[in-house]
Image 1 (cartoon, one colour):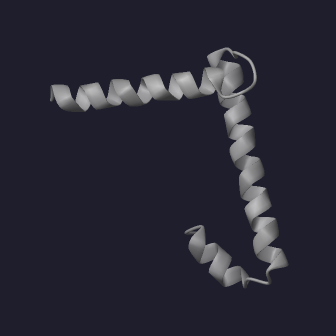
Image 2 (cartoon, helix red, strand yellow):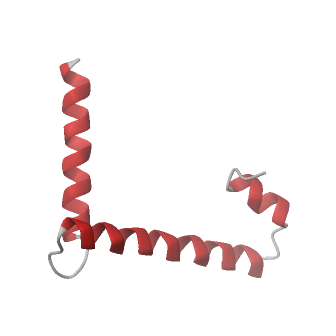
Length: 68
């Protein structure tokens, strides 16, 4: 339907905008998406580190990550 196509185009536009302007300067889309992916990976590692510091059992962490 046209509504679903509009939603898809909206999501694509937002993704492009976020990846090109999420830093302090303007990035090409390829550079921006690499930067965003790196940031997400950093956040995952930081979350895992915090969980380990809080002595959260590994089974619980795996469940939260849907890896159990």
